[in-house]
Image 1 (cartoon, rainbow, N blue to C red):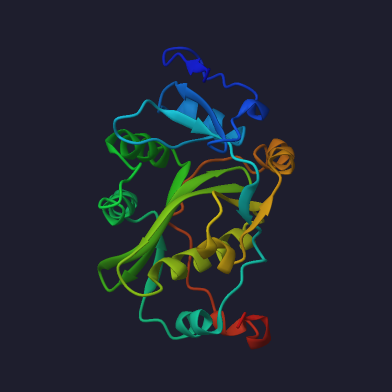
Image 2: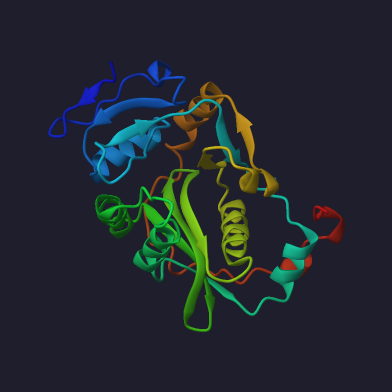
Length: 244
């Protein structure tokens, strides 16, 4: 049976090797969507994912999809867009707007970004743990992503776009920022062809967890990212480094 976690107890998860193989990574149900539960989960390679009418479900799939900063692949067309973009990219200017846009994008097919998820990650954002990377066209929010940063790990949650390449632009800026700040990895959770096209690759869960044990204890201070300068010089990326 799937373990049930008491919502009023201190966060305590089963060992992740107890997670089911089918569906891949399902570990436990119950618990709470509070900052202490979420931070404890992420440090152990666990994340919540559930529908509006379900109990909270916790997952730790094997293998794990990650992007290593410095390994992102830029297509020639995306690099051209980055060099000549009419967009600007900012951090933590409209976290709630990014979350709502991510939810709206998936509303027709079903979204896990329900009211409890929005409240939970908004609380993490106020504490300096959760962040948004936003693509703007003038004063219009046209793309972006959000996730959680603990130590040298960024846990990506969701992205959206309202203009072509707007989410890819946000992701490219996130990777460049994390390179500058010496982050070790971006956790993308589940494997998708879109992430693979950007340089994502699968690693065994055991390898991922071994890294987390070190990475999540380094440069740990939560803070707002609103002051970070995202005006990178994409002309410095050699053309031969761009993927076809």
